[in-house]
Length: 187
Image (cartoon, rainbow, N blue to C red; front, side, top):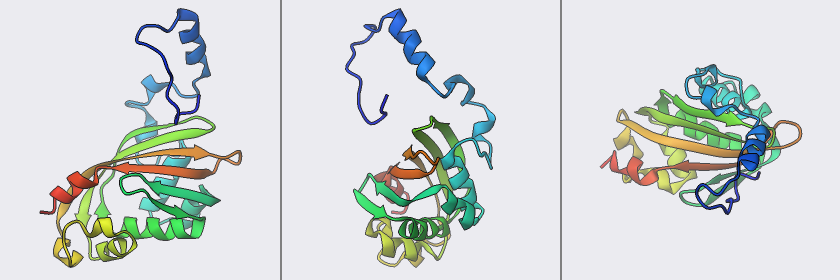
């Protein structure tokens, strides 16, 4: 089932045979994800967890290896799109360096075709916030001069829904974060 399309069913209308067939289609056992090793720091369970932990460790070679050359990264709060591995890596570096992050994974699941990685992005704003603000004006976060934010703590949930090509590379990412709540933390 494509995660981007909604199923048209009414509550409790699914027959027992359909339910068991749908359960067999899953590549992921969700009950094991809540407290499993998929959520541990450094997990390599999915393409996105490999990307994220490489990114947090400044291992840009392994981070880039998770991405297709023609990747498209869509930031859903403002509909900004970044296309191509080189530009996506540049944006990821700016985002990574904008704060001293202390990530807390919440969900890490993937099939052969798509996945979801959600984490609590918390940390302290660094002087490099200006680089992210230059790349995306929404990250000025209410301050004309981003240096005024340096040293401030923040926390925001971020969710990535992504698609995987036949080589196991991420080729499409939809990134969701509560930008309005993040901005409120800096007022």
